Image (cartoon, rainbow over all chains, first blue to last red; front, side, top):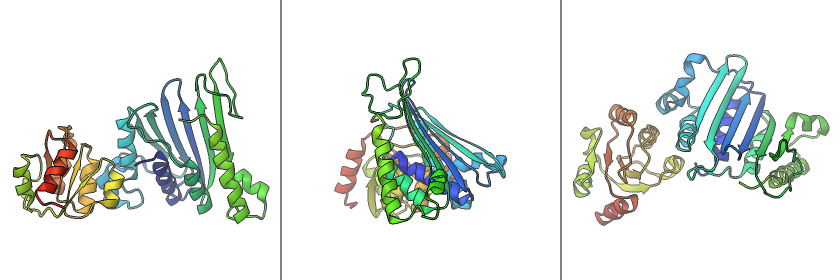
Length: 199
Length: 111
């Protein structure tokens, strides 16, 4: 796909279909080791171990589990093309964790794309709480615009994170889908992303 | 135009499903992003790509493509050919680049 955010949305939707009520999405851009890692962890019903390898087989998935479709095989192929991989670990009744890695600088690696739009689509879908962490590490001499700059041992680190469960507590009776809240959320995410060093 | 005629005209090498070369090629599509192919290619199209992963067979069989031309002499994985045989999807290869294959198809009247 043209943007990794489209893959991310696809996988997040798998979590919803697996009955998850909470998903943690972590995007880790480690420029020091030239690695991009996307992790999606959910508390859905999980996948029996003997079925895990089948999920990467486009025929198994297109023929028998319509939810998954070609999503996982396409993501795996995209990762493998960029010296990375996709792994899936799961425990039935506990949840599933998908980890996708890419060589960050690989020419064929699609850009992360419109993360703000992707996150909003998912959050406003309302099916799931989302904890989101986007981390960029070791961006060298790049400007220190990031509010979340931490830095340890000379390696710079930026982070943008939020949790919709915490937002809901703050908002009380007001739903996340309220037009004012929605607009605030859009700006909050767009600004948080903009604070991170560009890819 | 039959796939077999196209294969002869462009000197394409047939790697799978030779029994399906009597398929009618009713159009063409060229792209290496499988999501685009899924969204935009039509049944009966001949698809030109440099991808050789088994996923190309899944896409072709989903849409009902006439066949796949793997261009640029790109390698097709053995697992892909195995699936293509099972699914009856013809895979043809050529050293020609995608642009040249598309140009020749167009000249043959595949539009």
